[in-house]
Length: 209
Image 1 (cartoon, one colour):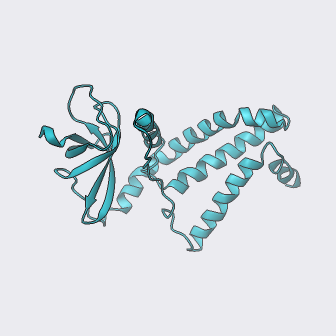
Image 2: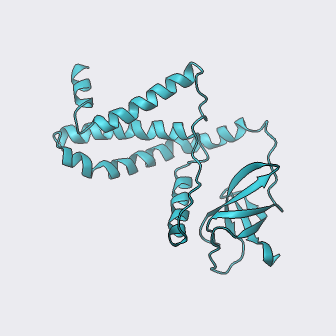
Image 3: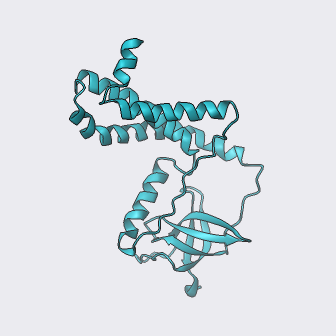
């Protein structure tokens, strides 16, 4: 046990250990009731220049692929950092031999593997968290007007902001038209449908309807 602790605080592993300790402290706070499991959530709302909006859309799609927005953020975070910690401890001990440059160069691959593990572990939980919200009456967005805050096309997922009686709602969307036009952020759109299989809404430009 002492050897494990010594290994965990080595320079090559200390970042992973800190990330995992944060997760442990947070989860203990949830258990004693200090926090709710959903009290930390991820909100994809980035106000950046138009020339990189397409990259933001890809980033939002990647977050959705790894179940962010479908599962509470801290559950995904916890599984990811625990996986990263285990992988890093083994790699840095047996292959890197504690070399700090080896640890730096392997951080991103380890992060990717951790996210993949978290995706497979959390995907079966998606219906559970959907059922937990069954008591809340769902909002029918179809027919409502919104404004794009992330660009969208018929292939690229974007995001629309809708104001409902002063409450701001953000939903993932795609353009219903079959043409390859990219709608930039700031454009007014109408929600015209919902894709149950892929969990996003269809939109059209307001002036087209």
